[in-house]
Image 1 (cartoon, rainbow, N blue to C red):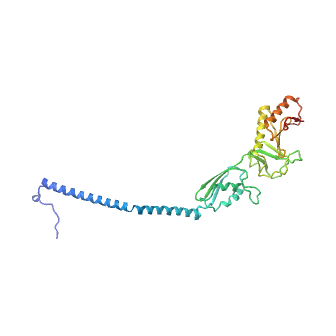
Image 2 (image 1 turned 120 degrees about the horizontal axis):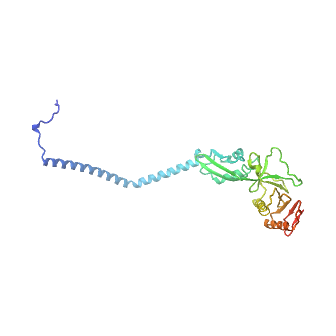
Image 3 (image 1 turned 90 degrees about the vertical axis):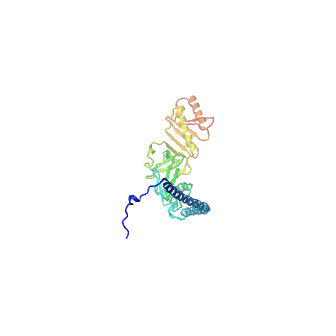
Length: 313
């Protein structure tokens, strides 16, 4: 049976000499150096193995990258997660018809988001719909489309601004034709498209300048191009020059489609212009008329269309 350990008696204690201390210190120093050498050799072996397996690691990394690419392509081509499932249209104008837009964009549902070309969407909005007779957004100015992955399309539709309130007069009538009840109101966009909206859809319709259309062969249909932008610009420029040069305000504007002319009604009489000759020449003839004709000579109109002549009644 072992006895309980006790301290060594004092008489057996020996004094540690300097030689013994140096011997012990050198022994511990060699042990530390040995441990350090072991770790150093281990690190060198690991480094040599890494260098030796570098080619294998590169091949594995390349294979992993190719596998990820193939996985992404497979998800893009076959996964239903990336199908178009929702289309959000920002209602920026009360003239937009949500039901017609939904019908026009129906072919987009189920298409692949990554493969969907944005440029193919505006023609869907401007192409005539079967059973409706016109496009969902015939007066489209622009559309901004954003893909919100994984399955949503964001759209912001901008319409062409309405520039004129339109009255279509029968050629054999002196008064404009009265629109049928419930048919809404007729307007003209700034690029000459004839559109039909309710007064509530065009809140500023009452403050728009009025344009009367006469002398048409076939009655114009809504959502068709009625006048060219150049024609409308000529009318606007003529009004501005009458105001600046002669201080005249045109109260009404009447456009003759087949004759390619327009009449501006002033306070005392109408001025007849056409778009086949420069407006500056026609205004110059009006200056000659004011300088040569006695005041009150014209009661109904002054015809400025004929080069070299001024006709009035």
